[in-house]
Image (cartoon, rainbow, N blue to C red; front, side):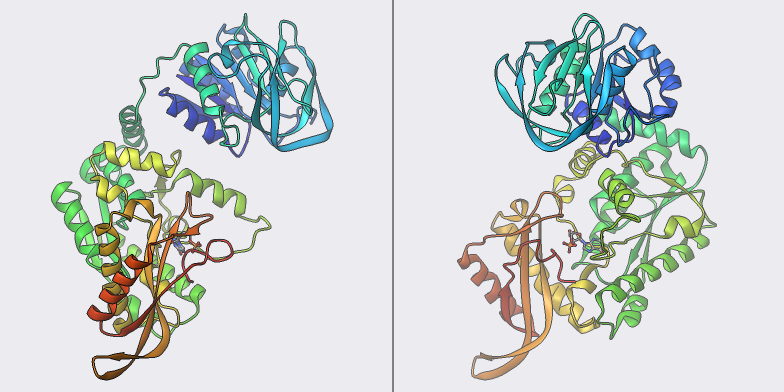
Length: 512
Ligand code: XMP
């Protein structure tokens, strides 16, 4: 496989992801433990990541010298280029004009790294982000690409199979970057490209067994894709050492708790405790209109109930969570950062600190679509894997003005009809997320011969890649009319339906 040495770049995991996409196994190690990892793994090639550091800083990190003496290919990216050049006898300087963002490079020489992708003399878009630059090449190297801001945009010593690039091939803003990394791991390093999600699964299972040993694991199953995939994977690894707890807060979609429970118990034979805590949640939430207070109450109750259940089981040694890589980056880059809290997106946040258990997080390196692929590998039905995201606080944040049991019932019915129509129309997979919001506003209507005075229901549907930005979905008006008619006819308590045409930003996806 490939050893990726991490010098602290925000996007090192993206390098691993591109390598996985090329069908090649890789491991990321922090630079501090790169030496022993290199000895143990005996990789076919090494990739050096970027870094917030500068090679001119005293004590800035270096790659273990032996990787350059082992006769294997090495690729340096950004800081990786700088440290490689510095360690091999070149020179790097702080650059007075730092370069960030989109840039164009020109290919100066053909080389194995560019083979079949970029030809000599052509120009290509890349993503730059650096404050240092190489000024003298080490012996044996030549320039293979240049840019106005970086005369050494890409350099190579083809005899030793050393390559280095100033730009970031791992990010999407370098459109050919994935192919470039695939060239490195397959053509230059000679890896076969037959590594798959099935192999990932086996490796993850092995790792869980090693971590957990004979210990007991509990997992908060929400019915979402992430916690479900994590639970199934851990169950494959350690069987009934795992117990799942599903806390039904009474804020789920129609039949959700029941269906999820049935699926895991019957099809997967997973030890699963269903706790019906809806009364407790709803009585504490009743009358609370403030969105953040709702979230806090739900988060607190969730932890309390989960702890009670864990105690009944006699405790556990490990807590399993379906944390994904983007959650890891967000919590690192946002904690203590200058960004304001728009919404406190916590689900089981706070649990690990409170419960004094070790975490098992088998999805920590994966991105959402990879988790879906892994779920597929584990045999989860595609209809389950492809479900829209659903917020931890559930329908509570879709009842502005405060929840009551009756309002939740109305909302649940209307939401079910809306989603059923979306499925019937074949639109479900084209939409990132669709749901209804029950407004605390009553309007006058007329049904048959009578006057009605009932609530307004708003429909929302958005497209998005990652939930960070979103566009409202452009339905055909006939479809919306049909949904409105069905809801007003079938759900008592709603006499008017509106559609939300706000994108994010400036709106958020949820209303609270
Ligand atoms: P917003 O509303 O912030 O939502 O644009 C972006 C995505 O996050 C979901 N969301 C939440 N998920 N706990 C969650 O687990 C929360 O408190 C929460 N609030 C919003 C939302 O459904 C959308 O997918």
